[in-house]
Image (cartoon, helix red, strand yellow):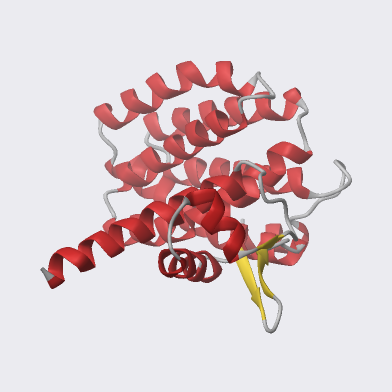
Length: 234
């Protein structure tokens, strides 16, 4: 009975976690907004315990931040924090692309091709932010899957929550369709390098793609956010 109660508690916590996560990513709680426990209890219809545990998880993932004596609010990431995320992501996914070019199967590449065939529909519609982000993540996940490195896959999965939040902010901040079209064509270039079994080119192209996505977050579309980091990671 105790085991069953524990399972129900864990299941409820994860359901609450997912619901709050979705609310933040969908813009219901914008950056800097305080999230109150009473508000969530009324909104979700659950007790305080799973809410507190879910909030703690989101703080650990840096989607939310805990401010002593004030509560919990949606984190408003600084440019440095965004750079830190993407510096790590570029290196890890660069390695994944290298390995995928060496180890990926025709089945992996076919899955990527099938996914890319559908991407323009999402990328060309400013109202399809979540679909576009999901499709983008699926493409990157397939590259990691093709690398055959489970430790790498686990590490990148841990980064996913923070990366997804940055992606939502980027999409809402910059709806220039030319930029999203560029993302699609860069995906095409990455896949081409993988199919041609060119590890060095695959790594270079995914680095370029990732740093271009960071540039969506800066106020000026002409600012080079990669700066010194770009020269160090290429």
